[in-house]
Length: 95
Image (cartoon, rainbow, N blue to C red; front, side):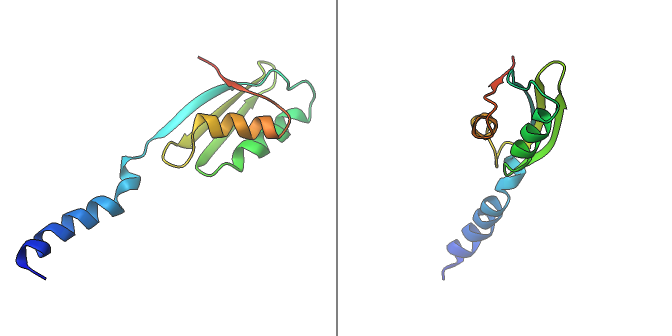
């Protein structure tokens, strides 16, 4: 190993192992119009919490919305909407 390699590897390793430092926590509101019964919010919340990277889920049954906080390096809005859809409650991002 040359002296040049010794100088390159530590910064490179630090950058690779600190990728999680580049992630950000995001919060998104999903419209879930199919939540029509008292059990629906529970099902939606459980489905969303199963998505890796989801930190918190708040459901507003009256507004038919789910507010989801997640790490964007581990989850995406597409994964969140797919999770609710697979649980039987299609959702879309509310702007």
